[in-house]
Image 1 (cartoon, rainbow, N blue to C red):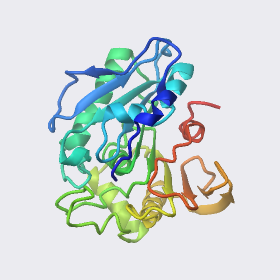
Image 2 (tube, rainbow, N blue to C red; image 1 turned 135 degrees about the vertical axis):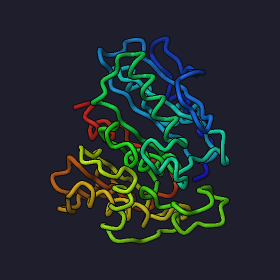
Image 3 (spheres, rainbow, N blue to C red; image 1 turned 60 degrees about the vertical axis):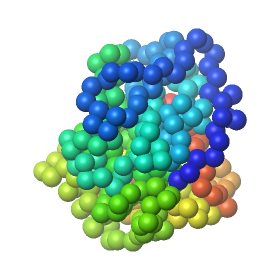
Length: 292
């Protein structure tokens, strides 16, 4: 969950235009006092899509802005990027907190939803094209957001994360927390995992977010079993089963796991890949439906 320096990747986030990452000081209800940064490209689309990008433990929204090539794709395609940033708990998201694990319960999740609503209102965003992605603690929070606020997100992509509510009951969810049972590959049945999601928003019967889960098989900090458990969770929620595996997608190290026809749920496991972001932006954006 700790972040290696991403500053060396800053060149990947350089834009061809004049837009830059900006902090928003006041964006609505913010119970845990997290911070909001936003990237709005110079040529923003009409009714733009919105991607919430969540940093790992020890990181910041500013660093995660430089951690992938999403800003350059935003320039090309006109979508908006939100980079939440938490100064709390060693810069880790509160994925163990009952408030974030409960719809409209508050916590970091509540602040992130305020950021989404602010952006939808300010930039006339498309409420049917709101997405969430993140790495490590941000990947864990991606699953939390998709589980606690299914009506907000069309799809999510979690990298090196854990299932929704995997850390529930723990005193914290940082690499320094005493209870690392979740990160070491806590196992439950698909139904049990699915119930965690359903219990976060009792009575909800609407559409659920489509999900993409990516993990390195050599990850010793957040074990690859965590991805298997997340896939069990979302396969139960989305009602799809593993149908086939394809080696070499999106690159030679990875094996793609396709559930159903692949439109609802996909998994990617990287052979020899450790605790690293491993974000293939084209694969991500194709799954989201933002590029062809």
